[in-house]
Image (tube, rainbow, N blue to C red):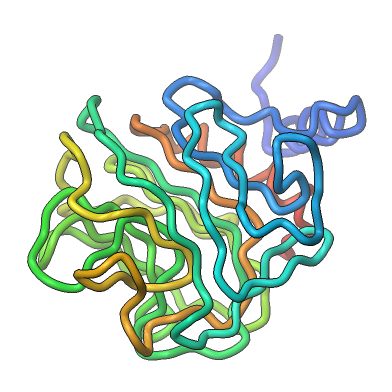
Length: 240
C-alpha cells in the first residue's frame, strides 16, 4: 500500500459515516463522550435535561438552562446556564480533551469543558477561551497553549493532550502541561468556569453552542487528533 494522504483519510472517514459508523472515534481510554446529535444513549432527545455520556463510564452531565438543537446544546452565557458532571480519578498520567463549539459573544474568560476551578488547585484539565484564544490548564498557573484567535459564531474543533494539540486543521505542540494523576478536586463543568462551589463562577459562562466533548485518560497522538478532527468536521459541518 502507498502512503496514506490527507485526502485518503477524508475519504475513509466519509465512507465510515456513510456506512452508519457514526462514532468511529478511539475507544481506548475514553472516559467521557458527549455528542449533541446522539445526546442520550437511546438517541436524540430534544427535551433532555441530562447530557448522557456515550463512553460507557457513566460521566453524565446535568444541564441547567440549556436548549437543544439537532446537533448542538446551546447556553446563554448567564450565570445559571451551564452543565455539571462528576469528578474523575485519572490513572494514566495522561489526559486529552476534545471539544467542538461555537461562541456568539465572549467574556474575557469563557469556560468550555473540563474540571475548571477558580483558585489554586491541581488536577483540573480544562479547555477555556481567554481573549479569543483557546487554552488548556491543569493547575493554577501551570501549563497552557495559546492558539490563533477563534472566530465568533464559527464552529471550531479544539483538542489538547499533553503531547499534541489541534485547532481545526492546524496542529500545535503543547508546552508546560504536566501529567494528570489522581481524583479531580472538583466536578466537571460545561459551558462555564468553576468556582469553589459546585456551581459556576459568575461572568465566565459560554454564550454559544457545544456540539461534542470527548475526554480520555490517555494522551492521544497528533495523528489521532487529526483523524478525530476529520470525523467531527463531517459530522458537525465545521468549515475549513
